[in-house]
Length: 140
Image (cartoon, rainbow, N blue to C red; front, side):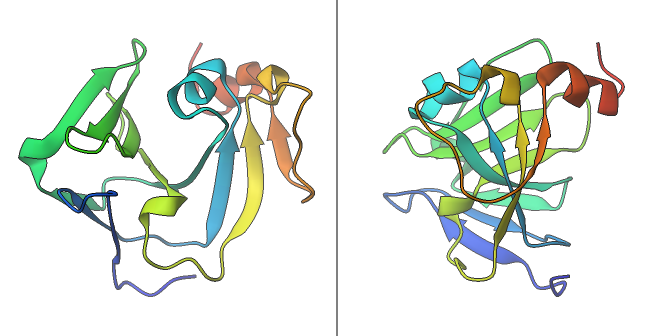
């Protein structure tokens, strides 16, 4: 468990800052085709509900990447800031944004059925297909 003290981070140019209160040190990887197209590889992120705040909001661009989610980025430097669900309090914050880089554990991979064969992680993780992930969250 983490303390209730928020973790902070920023985009590459510093125009946008993020503060997030997390209850764990878990990092997840998303292998979906959209995340890979967005960042050139899997999205490595920490999940949080609605305990996320941003400063520099005028510099945040938002792209509706699906019917249920959208992605934020810095308009100045292009840094990926978040993936968030539209109808639920859920954010995935790229782990690289956060200043604190010690003590994290990769423990979950989603859309494992879309992961290309040219890479793999050494850690043993929970691996969910897209269908299993949607079933877990009651979506179809």
